[in-house]
Image 1 (cartoon, protein in one colour):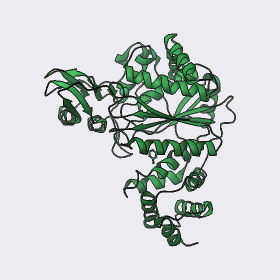
Image 2 (cartoon, rainbow, N blue to C red; image 1 turned 90 degrees about the vertical axis):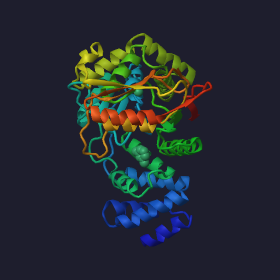
Image 3 (cartoon, rainbow, N blue to C red; image 1 turned 45 degrees about the vertical axis):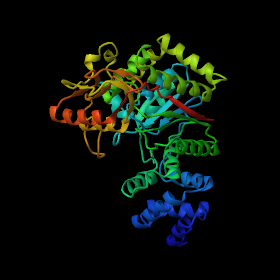
Image 4 (cartoon, rainbow, N blue to C red; image 1 turned 180 degrees about the vertical axis):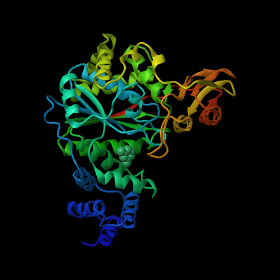
Length: 434
Ligand code: URA
Ligand code: CA
């Protein structure tokens, strides 16, 4: 086999066999195929696409490029939930405890935040003492005991993705749907859960800005999951504005606790109930999504979700006192208000710019090695459809550095667009692929 022939085939829209795809990926991971040839192939994929069959073969060879988690010692049907990345997306911190409170094992292996999107692991670290580095043994023991654990990836999971993603990142090939699908699903499948719920984000704060593309990605990922006998459901949700109010690590933890207390922003709560509804279907707790949603509401209103969150924090060494005393969470020392430059209805909020503002404050990282500030971020107080007066507060910046706060303020102002006539609130749930 010659690599150049495989690149040529993909470039010309011809199909590769599973063996040819395996040869490419194995060769790349083991350093036998150079970056420039792999870069040419990923660009060919970006331009010509891959068939579903090729994407499944790619996922399979990536999945087996390193260690896989064996979770067979965890009793019951194990669920994992994954979001394709959004701004202010606090859902995992809320959903995990809700689902686990019903006795369904939640094995959440999560990443750190990169770019303008935040990571669950970083958010949890804003709880003093919370340990995200569990060994495999600790992870399994904890899920058997309290039905939930949230930890960073351990071991050498999907090295092919680490290498390929870094290459895609610098060759303008991140936004290829078959490459995103195989990247996400290889990691999910390697993490060992039995059933997978995907939250595919679309809009100004997401990788994909277009609904048709998001549907294609969702269908492809569901097909991949099902082809490995891991039942998968994808919910497509709107990321045209940040989810909830809070964007930033400790701010989002606080917001998650509020939702578990039956309070918190409506949009965040709505998405959590929908996602939980489908997780209960996947976990065979209920027959229909509607029953699942009602069950999720009961778990919140009875306080069982909050109690499970507390158990999770305690089990991983965190200070449970934060639940009743938010002052124990890290918090930037200063506040800066962002006031509306005009009167009218809010027509658009560019969520990516809000994510970038939060990153500039120090809540996110540009490079993997960057250290983050857990106490800073943005509270988005006025959202699409709201009527505002001139000089009314649109958002609040929580910071430690006035210069960075001013930079963030300008980005946030840029992210808002106004309309003189009423604007309806955007639909949050756009589609579900079963
Ligand atoms: N998230 C991933 O894990 N991989 C991608 O390719 C894109 C988003
Ligand atoms: Ca939020």
